[in-house]
Amino acid sequence: MKDYDKYMHTTEHVLNQTMIRTFGCGRSVNAHIEKKKSKCDYLMAQSPTEEQMAGVEQTVNEVLRMNLPVTESFVTAEYAEKHYDTGKLPESAGNHIRIVHVGDYDDCCCIGPHVSNTGEIGAFRIISYEFNEGRLRVRFKLDEL
Image 1 (cartoon, one colour):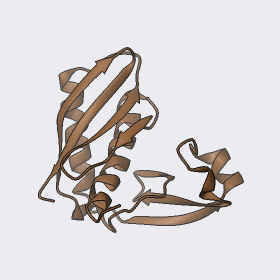
Image 2: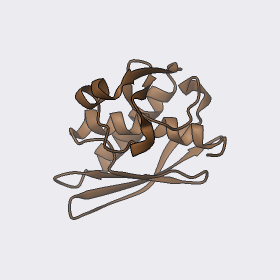
Image 3: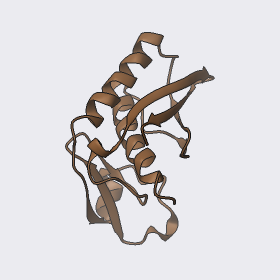
């Protein structure tokens, strides 16, 4: 992964937790992270309103401005299976699973790169979203990367 990926990837963590807290859905079922724009797909029962999506954007930006530390810890695969969603981990992850913590806002299994503090990330912007057959696709970018 390139250096810019750490900004987008950390933002994905914050977006995922914001979606969970706002809609009660799970973490993204599919994500594609790139420098210019990224996308995440969420399984949801109904399409969110424009106001709800504006609220998601606002909350993500508020969390990013909190300057939360981004840290890691390691747990056994057995512990991870009981306490975290391990569905996206590669089979080669082994028995020592890395957990990434974004302050006290989010923690999950992850193998990607991250910033050390959310204050390093620019402004989050949802550039589009669409809902189709129970799947919400959110496209976003970061300003000032």
